[in-house]
Image 1 (cartoon, rainbow, N blue to C red):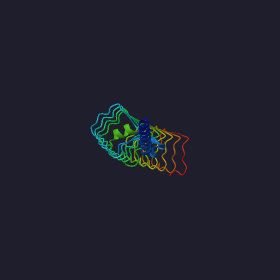
Image 2 (image 1 turned 90 degrees about the vertical axis):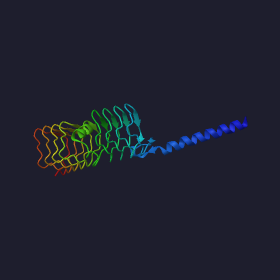
Image 3 (image 1 turned 45 degrees about the vertical axis):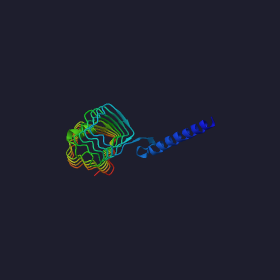
Image 4 (image 1 turned 180 degrees about the vertical axis):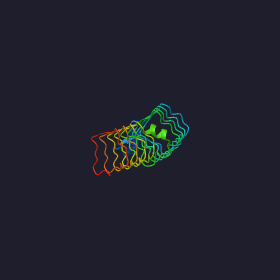
Length: 229
């Protein structure tokens, strides 16, 4: 009986140590909290059918996700930095706190996607067609597109709330009828952009280049124009 008790105590101790180790190894500070996540860096999930699945707090940096079916999936706090999503199906997907920085997005289907707190800065969107860009950023809430190159893009009638477009290049972009609410456009390049019938409400326009912009019927309320160029 004494031997059994000793063995049982050892087993409990081993299990407790394993669980503690797993929790510590899973902490990922990039989300701003100590979330325990699944580490699947550099995983090869190419061609998988993950339709409607729920993937939360998964580290997929550098993963091969080519032609993956993620249609109508629930993706929360997924790290896709540097991942290869070429040809993936993200139609109808709910994306919350997903980081696409440096991901390959050629040929990805974004129709019906809902983004909140999504990050796709710098050149992440460069390889996308105009329709893909529209589907990706439209109705995005609190998303990060800092330094994005959107020159000459047709973004008519899109809606952005609380987005970060600081230092973005929107020269010559067609922004007619856009609805920008609380968007950070600090130091953005909007020269020669079309802004007719647009609404800019509570936006940060500090240092923005608005030269040769057509402001016909533009509605501007509560915007910060300090040091506008």
